[in-house]
Length: 638
Image (cartoon, rainbow, N blue to C red; front, top):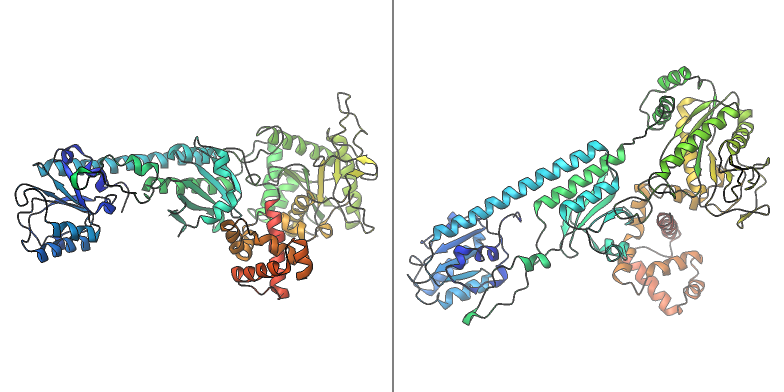
């Protein structure tokens, strides 16, 4: 039943009822039942005419005289689901209702209230019905405001942080947006402590298990809805509703009394959130899903066309022939060309998406070190530098920003033999055109080789070249590049995908280049050339970490164990499983690595078997679990 209806407790707190000096005789556990309507009766067989949720008023003049008849009357009312029974004393019962009636009501949990002073029932019905109508009207107005507010946000293309902030403002409750791996993308504490709200969030979130796409988890006090569009879910929106805590205390305007007027101690059950909050989280989730589909950018006309064409190749929004025709009109010939997808990005930026594992209050992670405005400005500068580098290297191709941190290029080369030479020429030109980078002739970086326009050197910046694969291999980076200090997280990444012979396969090269650039952010090797062969399993999982299917795989393989660890934080079976797999399933070595005795370690392995329902002696099962662990590490590492 909708929470807009008042409870029996609230009805008893109304002035017309209090005028009758109410006294609770039985059924205190049912005081928080909602009252759908008020019905006055003086006949004993009224139950078949009721539909449930009514508060029944009577003077008792028509009630049975025998004990069995009174028990049957109370039982019939309880069976149809009435909210409570109010009996006015003075006509049939002078000082109190019969004990047998009170006992029957207590047994069935039906609130039974005496009115010790004569009270016009019409005033009670008017007051209750007015309360119901007013509550429903308030709910409708709130719902209308919710629809209007989120419609405006959708039209304006509001960001994730703004949508979450508005949801918290309209509800007055903390709101958290998380991805499928229980990482926080945005949140608004609604005036509460953000530290307390997000403390051990992943473990807490795994305990929240609503029964449905949008549902309220009464045990944990969270209203949850799934966020996604076009059949692809990518997160959850959670709103904390206090349930039976402070709200229940606020609703106790009537303090029931028992025999002798003594207060009755009652712990109110959790109160479900009102319908308007369910509508609110669903509308907020829809707005977030829609916003994720919309990309807006202010660019020049030529760059806009370049972006339109690159986007068309990536999402198949235009026929390939039309893309080739429009590109030729721009002076970029793509037919009968050797095509190579290239992506350039700053190494220190977060991957494209909604933010890192923990965003700032109400906002996804900013795209750059200079705040929300610095990221787009730096991306525009990078796009201009990439375009200028193409012109200096006398190369042709489409170029545009392809996400919030990366600039994409589709190089159109006359023949396959020109591939490596063209990539080297592009990288060399880029270090001259981009003020934050400098490179040596061999493709490595020399931080101080070129002064900035103002004459000052930038020793903390460099170009990191990522291009065609080199067969001789290179040493892993130890933080220095041929004796020159390489600052962690600085410089540019240039990634190149596999070359393709025609425009219809161009998307594959572009997507591959973007994935390589993303994975190369975590690579510690100092390679002058970086392409797909250098991306191992860990890199592959890292670049796929935002893919809902990978997150679903991790949850399917390890979700039960992660939930167990959340419930038993002292055991941490995940670490036991990791030690076992990393030691090649050697139990003795794994026990030593986990600093556990062998009996204790074997007992934990047995518990893991039961929790995950897997065979830890099976190579196939262990391989799947090991991949899931690597994927979990990739998901948790920005």
